[in-house]
Amino acid sequence: MACVGIGNQAAWDLRQFEKTGLARFVAFCDTDMGAAHTQPVLKDYPDVPRFQDFRKMFDEKANDIDAVLVGTPDHSHFPVTMMALGLGKHVYVEKPMARTFQEVELMMKAARKNPKLVTQMGNQGHSEGNYFQFKAWKEAGIIKDVTAITAHMNSARRWHGWKTDITTFPAGEPIPSTLDWDTWHGVVKEHDYNHDYINGQWRCWFDFGMGALGDWGAHLIDTAHQFLELGLPTEVSMLKAEGHNRFFYPQSSTILFRFPKRGDMPACDITWYDGINNLPPLPEGYASSATTADNTIPPPGGVAAKPVRLQPGKIIYGKDLTFKGGSHGSTLSIIPEAKAKDMASKLPVVPASPSNHHANFLKACMGEEQTRSPFEVAGPLSQVFCLGVIAQMLNTSIQFDPAKKRITNNKMADGLLKGAPPRKGWEQYYKV
Image 1 (spheres, helix red, strand yellow):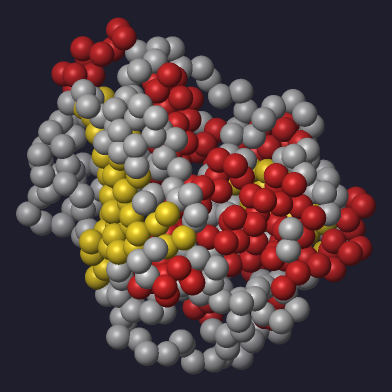
Image 2 (cartoon, rainbow, N blue to C red):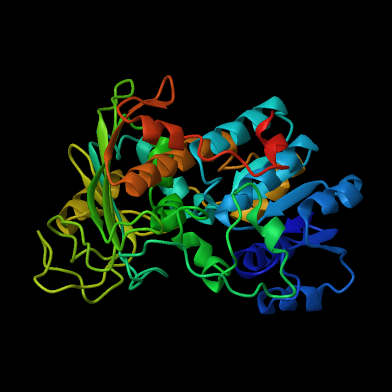
């Protein structure tokens, strides 16, 4: 296994692969091998070859590599993944898959071109309890006729409190001597270096990251999206964009996604809430649920008068039942509690997960399992986030044609499906 990115989230992924006992690391790549966050891994693996440019790594070590971890910022998932797939390597890429709709489309196409290659997006909860529970409850008819889903992430984000009347990107600063700033950009146009672009700060900016939606959407709506077969929406509308500007994400966003009827399943709306005080309306019985993990929950039936904190979570509204859930792999509960007691004897047995997300990927590479978040599953989910980000960026409502994969009511928004042309010298990754 080669690891592109060895600090922060990538370091955590690397350790999870290490714990499986199934991976042997043969190459490490990071654009800043001198950064503090890369040192623990380098200290523990002093003999693994090191690179700062993934292209050079593949040029020198491709024959030694079976699989690749891509744990880089959102904007550089795409070129690393495309090069790895083109060389016949299995790929585990952190979520979201990529930054633009077209990039995700090309990644799915590249994976389909070589079906023997294993792919997995790193929404690790997709191999835990909620995945198996949602699947079992859907198949047993417990979760059915879902018409509305609320997903909320109301914790503080890195850009909260920034001045939103910004008119230019931050002023340039000296580039750290250990950082390959040119390669860090990948396909994206070059910016003057600023410390607020690196070490997770990239998530704040439209040019580099996918904001709260791209970060947490894959942990909140992933199972509903897959098992309710939601696919792509026909409409995405910004209902709130507090502190909107054209450089970084709003302080608070409320986004409505409308999905059409699928077979015998009714049309379904997902309403996304982010921002500390941008709380969703809560159904009766929410606060009394046994899965409540916070003592500052609003009273049943509505939001409290003063701001409170909610754990990231979701509320799923079916015809007969309402479900409350948290993030990642946390399981759903039926609310209100009295209804949960009535249903207790009717619930199916939920199987335990045979492997965590990282072991699932490696076992799939060895032909023993199938990945639970392959590109064919994770791709459309990531494209939902891409459409949401376009609506955020323009602070508008868009009409989308899922068959033609075009935005039909806004020419500028339609152009953002593809995004800006890649930097000179990076065009080859857009060819499958």
